[in-house]
Image (tube, rainbow, N blue to C red; front, side, top):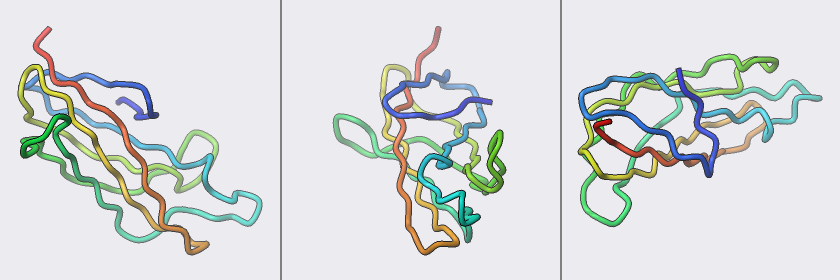
Length: 110
């Protein structure tokens, strides 16, 4: 399992189906018990233009290492060797925030 933390670039091979997480614990007001809520959405765009050919599925809220309900976990498959993608994750919170996170994914055949 990999965690996405901008500006780090994560990699996967074309044939892989991999699980990733995007963490939001540093954006939550944990002193008031704020957590992620609702149904998160995860999408991607191809860096440099064109249509993204990533398949992103099963976005769910999960507990972080020390903070409950503070991360979004999802699966990514497909993609094209040599291309880079901006992966965007949107999630609401119990405190009324709408958070957006970004990570960079590079597809490569090692």
